[in-house]
Image (cartoon, rainbow, N blue to C red):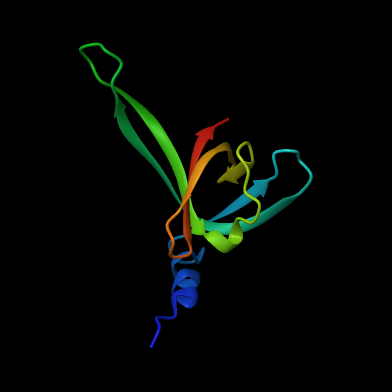
Length: 104
């Protein structure tokens, strides 16, 4: 019996549980839509060749792959009043996509 992954994803990405509302604006500003995803803005060390490590934010959002039809580099995601531009994404094969972002 297969797992009900679709309903599991709906629970995980629910704004009342773990998710946040994301507004997606197409790169050419032709349309916008909203979906729910899990936002993470981890701070990671970056090697700059000096003696003191520098830390940089690495924002990303995880969401259902079905919410990202025709995703394009340069699309804008608005999350909690902050705008981010889409840099890259990876579909993990389970219906979830991780989108790497850069603060505008």
